[in-house]
Amino acid sequence: MSLDRLIEGIVRTQNPAVVGLDPTLDYIPGFLKEPFLAEFDDPMEGAAAAFLEYNKRIIDAIYDIVPAVKPQAAYYEALGWQGVRALCETIRYAKGKGMFVITDGKRNDIGSTMKAYASAHLGTFGAAGKQAEPFGGDALTVNGYLGTDGIAPLLEVCDERDRGIFVLVKTSNPSSGEVQDKLCGERTVYQMMGDLCETWGGEHLGKYGYSAVGAVVGATYPEQLQELRLRLPHTFFLVPGYGAQGGSAAGIAGAFDERGLGAVVNSSRAVLTAWKKEGCDERDFAGAARREALRMKEDLAAVNKAIHI
Ligand SMILES: O=c1ccn([C@@H]2O[C@H](COP(=O)(O)O)[C@@H](O)[C@H]2O)c(=O)[nH]1
Image 1 (cartoon, rainbow, N blue to C red):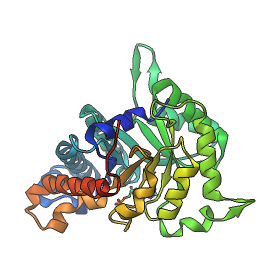
Image 2: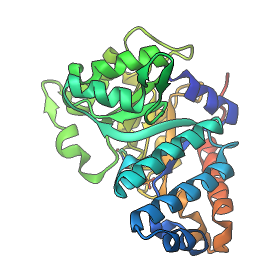
Image 3: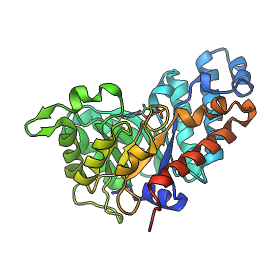
Image 4: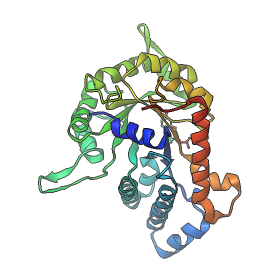
């Protein structure tokens, strides 16, 4: 169990970036969404169909230059079961294009319930011979607040199916310090959670030295990124907060190891709404997403000179 498939995608594209697929109707140009909204009586069905088509076009525009996508489940759940179906189909489409998919669900519960979340998002349903993947993601974001028994069922699935998790350690939002920066004995809560990631990842390291248990560390906290990189040598980072939340490439530099690995940086809104910022023809929205993804790649390369290996 490891995050090697993600790392291999980063090496192949020479791009430590993930594009967040967080669609809203507002981001989707009229020419694309209006026919779907008109076609279905149920507004959620029309919106879900528009989300899926929009995602496919974004994926088509970036899959050769960006190794991974991160659909945030909330945007799909907002449309009920139709949205959840669009999420499943988006995951399947991205995987069909060779992308690594991180489902951003931030799940956590007691062990028995986590077993259900683990098989839903990373596992399979059904018996041998008649088995299917419910969601089919490669990795899932989770909350570690309930402790080890809430994480153990995920580790089992990660082991069996070469999947990964990213545990919330130091989140990118402005209030993250209210709990995460509090001292608990001699360690902050985020340090304690980071140390647990190293423990949960255990001895099962992939060929690049990272385990299947990654950590979410926000681009908006450069000092903590650097500190945690040194403290957690086997824990790969998912770094949200670049772009729309104000995180910069310079602030992210400390997240990478000496090989240029160690982190994958997320950008959602900045890529999805690039066509609005550019002011280009709305029919070129996917082209604008690609241009923004290439701009981000260059921006990251300026602080993370080369990804060796
Ligand atoms: O600490 C965290 C954890 C998760 N997120 C998620 O990442 C994206 C960020 O979107 P942007 O549009 O690039 O700001 C979004 O899905 C969040 O739910 C985070 O921002 N911070």
